[in-house]
Length: 408
Image 1 (cartoon, rainbow, N blue to C red):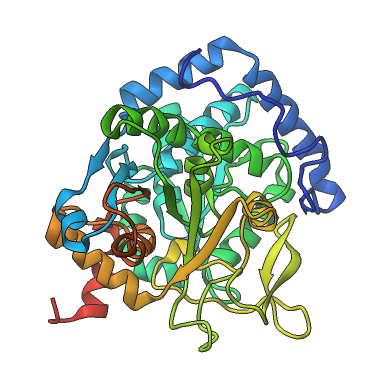
Image 2 (cartoon, rainbow, N blue to C red):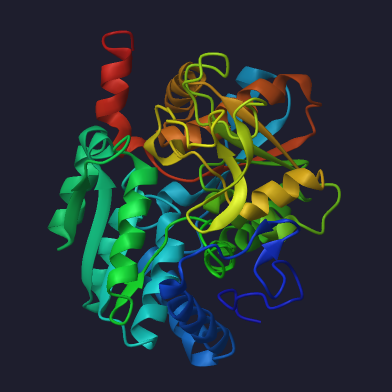
């Protein structure tokens, strides 16, 4: 079976879009027909060999798949414990895993006859990926981005505009990812007949979490085969950062039936849980509670009145108050563990990987690297940690320069 063919085994979500008690479709009536149309088109595309063949062709000749796995020997020796391998999504076209989902959804949009694509973005990588595939397929593209994120991700804003996208600053609320999603949904509701909302993470109303997971699952399918070829067996632990959760679920999905493979998702710990300035939905026992945000039921950071709390992470892609419903389910059934890394820990991991391996990770990915740095020394030397390096750090250099100053 082709690597690009999306798995159609009986797996969650159920027919109503739920992963256990999480997920679903909580939207105004005006969006129900658009979501029904999207689901029908996706099911049709799943069953169409021509769609799958075009996706596979573009993955190989445009995205640059398969991305490799790299054994980071010097980092492993420096830590003195487990052997660490990186799945190199930073080497995909546009510099992150976001291109996998953007390409699949853009092909779906064209198949549906939609000529206008809209998207939200935080770190800018999803916006860049969306602008890229829109240029490739000749589609109109508008990207909504919080003005705070635009300031800290200036290179990606410039890249989107070079690619022909209309980048619209969002000034409402905290002016970050949550608010960009709010505005994108409003746009879609007003113009669903001709507009395709290319949602960037494994969240939102059904069928988006499933669609995004399926397009990102190429990461795990490749990694599962590659780690056996390179290391001789499956990993003991898979680690990935979790904002909405697309890169993590993309890695985890192929290993879901391998009971010996543990999953660890790493949230944005910001300045620490006690500070209240973080984006750790699972780790905050006071404010991380069940709620509905952006059309899905999951964990949401909320105040005592149920209003969404402001979040903070040095990485714009993790700076979001909720998390994808499948991650909430994996945590509930104890299939995955979720922890966090602080801004300082992520910055330390950024520098450590750069200096020891010549690889600059995205600040989002640096959170996953930070968790590997914590875990590896206490594990046997023959243990294997597989870290999803979801993106490269070029986009974050302005932020890192500001944070570190001359202390490099």
